[in-house]
Structure formats: structure tokens, C-alpha cells
Image (cartoon, rainbow, N blue to C red):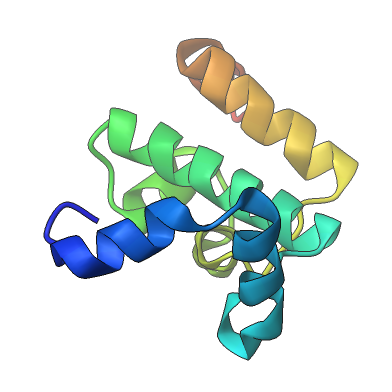
Length: 109
């Protein structure tokens, strides 16, 4: 909105919240997300942020945490909602990646 022409900004500023919502709902390209779509987007963002925090590519993240690459790609694309076990595992990676790595290393001995 920074580069918006002043006339358009003035029109938007004059609209009520109800009018903005009504117009948005009338736009087929601006429909609200379902609860499941939102959950998939949140999960995907969380995975992406965890991966980027460590400077890893998708293949590197998948290999490091013993995840199928297709799963990482689908999560980040928002096309996969993790089941409770995967959600817990991803949460552990997000909270304490070093503990997860230690546990993985101990499990292959």
C-alpha cells in the first residue's frame, strides 16, 4: 500500500470495516481460508522458518531430521497437514533441534 495512488488510498480509508469485508467476500480470488488451510499454512511456515534458521535447503533439512523430502516440500507448500505424531516431531525440532539430533544419533548406534 506504500506506493498506492493517493486517490485509491483515500477511497480505502473512507470504507468501513464491514464494507471492506463485504467486498473481499465478493471477490472470488480473496476468499478466507478454511481452518484446515490455515493450519496447513501455519505448519508449513513453521517448518520453513526452522529450516531457514539453520541455513538448510529442503533436502538438507529432510536428511538431517530423517524426513522424506516429499513431506518437507508438501508441508512448506501448505498441501500437507501433519498428523499429531509429525506435528510433535516438528515441534521438537523447532524448540530444541540439538536434542533431536542427539536422539537421532543415539538411535542409529
